[in-house]
Image (tube, rainbow, N blue to C red; front, side):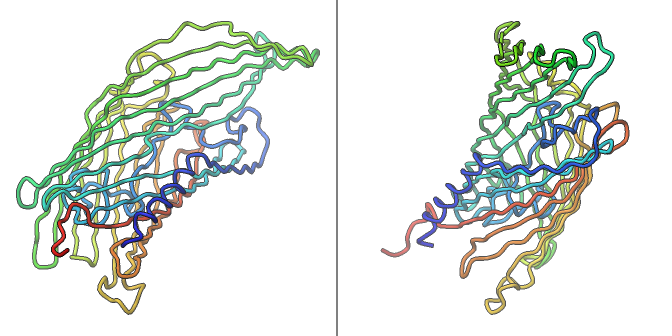
Length: 443
């Protein structure tokens, strides 16, 4: 593994480049100017709350429908349950990138968009036989939308509305875990949650008589978010016999407050034909407050047969009734009282010791999930469900792997004046293993 540091550096630089790369393609059918998806951009539901919650788990777990509560592997990092760090045997550096497409359907209009982004970065380190730690980075939430509609018979005649927003919330953390006694481990992650969000609404009167003297107004909220955030987990395993092992695990995150700063602007734009005049007509100064993130927990069980197969089921719930933004009330709109997800996932390796047949050492994964999103729009809870597939391709004579996973799912529905999103997310990741902090037996 002498080339591992070089490989790690190369792949890290490549994945960090995904921060700057966003590929988008758009296709549409139908015409309906009253439908908000006519903006043909990304995720309409990210307009509400803190945006779309992103999955920061590694590629292995994505292939198992993110059944994370009970997963541990001595050569992979499960950052969603920090108790798993105590099972690490080798220093593990891993990362990944996700390419996704999203098709949005509603009221006769269809749009398709695509995005490439970083998925996660982790460095797991075994400190001793019963203790481990991790340094990591994972996206938490993402906002990107560009929507439009129009209103007629208003006091200003016909008005065109434009809604657009963008931003990210990310989480950088350090975690640790230890085995209290045989079979039981506890762990924690603590780090800094940070990001910026912008949500804008523009109004433009449709003046058919004097098209070059249109008066427009833009209302924009800029939110800056940052603060300490933590998560705890436990994992218990018990040998049923010489081959089968039972695991029970879970995670817990309490309500936590992040600092939030809001700057709200109203900008007026007047078009004189060849000249645009912008004027900040209203600014109330910076407002400071708290963004309260909700309590969340997960529980799961797993049965595993040595290095052959494993099957897990997870239940995750979040109490969004405790969520609140004190300086920016628009971030509270259409946030429901709770969300949940049930995940079932498994993996299978034909023969991990078969050095003659490469594909016998490949690990194959599959998962299913069903639940509800945290948004409640038009008094409707949004269902979310999907199927996942994945695999891990081992490097020759090494515990390092190249991982791939695909997630095909749906969010929302077309009834109650809503839209339904169908998404496909492909994640490609890697994990490199090496020995750190282990004394040499010979010079």
